[in-house]
Length: 423
Image (cartoon, rainbow, N blue to C red; front, side, top):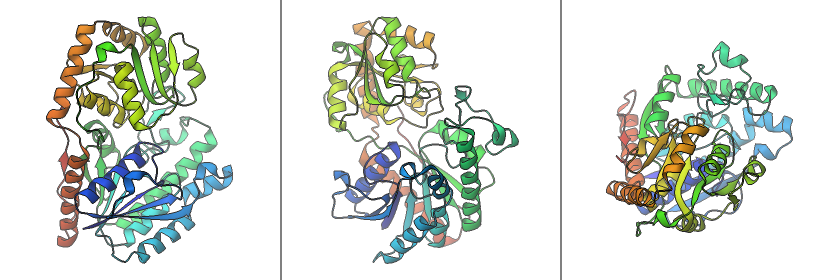
């Protein structure tokens, strides 16, 4: 089998690229030939150094680095991205048996859907966010600081001032969304476009939004790239830990404030627009972005818990799964896909993303015996059905086999596939 995996970058700029790169490695280790096609050139992640992985850069530019008007035009529809992808696929010595798209908004644009549809091979898209349905990508009202309740592209959606930047940005994203739908409906027609959901929650929300399109829905867990090790001792840690981009929709401000109110220090790994705000809260330490192995070591040494108090309907934050694998209790928002991997009160806590609820939950973690018990249960439960790279690759191979079978038999869609660890 030969799989072509498409994404914006060959190094992790976010969860989508991280999963795309790790998927490529897992498939290669399973014996699948992989070509990773990335829009923007640059250094490649060492995970891609494998004899069964080929890499093709399209020499495109990140639209965020373009002048605003040009970034808007190319973000809506990049003819150059379509032309270069078409040429790259035609130049491959072995035609891919299937194509798997992970992210397209930063360099590839919706134009790539037309190119992929013309290839004739089955196409999968992993939905790391809501961009296939929602103009701003996170199904969140930034004007109200709450999840959206509008149907995407309904009259209410078209007029809602929900964009995190401006009304002009919203208009551009709406046009991009319409162009995206036109490319999918015009290109795929009766053939299915296979959508891969990374959590039950995101699937339950997205599937109704996309009703009526040529979509076949599947469910596969993201991989967690951690080897099994002795569980951490979170009771010896002293900090409430947050890992990722410091934004309001991710709840970074809530972590700093609630930890301070609960009388516990907080540790922030990452950066973002709220960096100065969280630094100003007493007891907060910000260490910036760190390599994955350094993040793991920091969490094992310092964290009593890892927190993801998302205000938005987050699909499946990897940091929560990594903490469970290490034996660190987790606290997740009841709006996040990660919450379905937590046994409330047994391996961590599921709570509303508000200051009072988080403060109360953090205060409970002053109890060393409770923290140690939660961590041990988290480790044992995670490793009873681990979300390993090998398990992820096996799930993808099963999915790909079903997609190819549907393509060969001419059926309308492949059997809906679901593989997720029960935790």
